[in-house]
Length: 519
Image 1: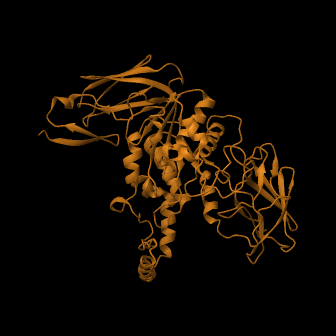
Image 2 (image 1 turned 180 degrees about the horizontal axis):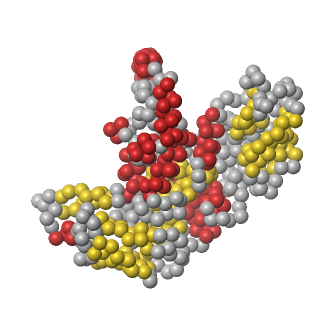
Image 3 (image 1 turned 60 degrees about the vertical axis):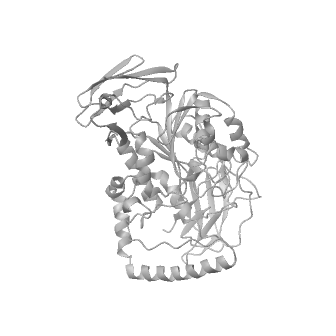
């Protein structure tokens, strides 16, 4: 039996035969296969393996590029920027052998990644999403899909059931508007934290990550944490016995304490095993951007929050991919807000508008943190608060359409509003705060109920009370009769904020925020 060995090139593992004539053959990764889409308007890498010193020639349309395999067997060429559209063509890659890649298109290429809401397949969600079901019945000659480290396929009723529902809906909406071929590549795994989706080097070299770990380490007490864990573990063991007796599902086992910077669940205690398995094989295929849907499972890196971790992930992907692509992520938590028009297909699963609760909720810290991710360069958020709730929202067609709207406005320059009102600045006049917004679109408005609501004010005591709020042109004036000297103002700062009803007239909900207004 012929011995075999794993050879790595460009981060892609390939099986090669030792001391065999087959070793001389030019080989390509799966991402370069029949039916693929090449990214338009930028350099297009084509790469593979061959015998050291072997000359490789790549031909596509009117271009011919040559390279020589290095001592490690790697070779790479870059096609000059291509124009989107045109008929499908054949690409040839020649060395001692000749490979023909058939039915190749040029257009827009996007990668989808994250956890279960990105991994969730068309076949699983179509039964509860009539729009998605209808879309999945058609054949799309100019939409191509690739799952994991597989090969490209045309999007049709045969290939779509196992493909990402949200990424497919995103691609359909893009293709319809742009009228060019669209390539969609997905690498996602349910229940996974962001800390498993960036390389170990990207994590450890990031200055913000290092700073947050250092700050967390200042207050980390191993003995105290271990004692608290042992108490929690003992309680858990009793709860498990009680659950068994009652024939109920047992509670989740508490996690053992981990020092700041440690990666929970990582392979050999390191970050990146999912990145290496699902993302690196796509590199360096030219892309326009990434659509990311993850956040429910946090970071799994002790002492590092989602905002900082995502900054390291985004920078790391761009550096290792060699491209400064756009990054769009879906807002978390999913849903839990009301919609401008709950009869629209995109938002018809939204929560219903509700009156203000008696007390101002205090569970909005993660929502605010997640909104902040858009502060990273060339990074945009797809608002989801008005799209429908649950850990696994059922209307993936709506989530895909909203994400495509963000791409069209932020990446492709279409004149479409991508956000609801977003805090810009404020001024103080006595006890009143005048708040100005970006993304007012066609103007500020409130919907549902008989007044604008969702703003809260706190004084020096830090206790929030519901505020009076009125729209004044392109601003909102906020005040409270019980708080003469306001120190802080929030809007919609709660995991569930169905009672917050500020929108722009483009139909998009205002983004949650917290501001310090003390002089």
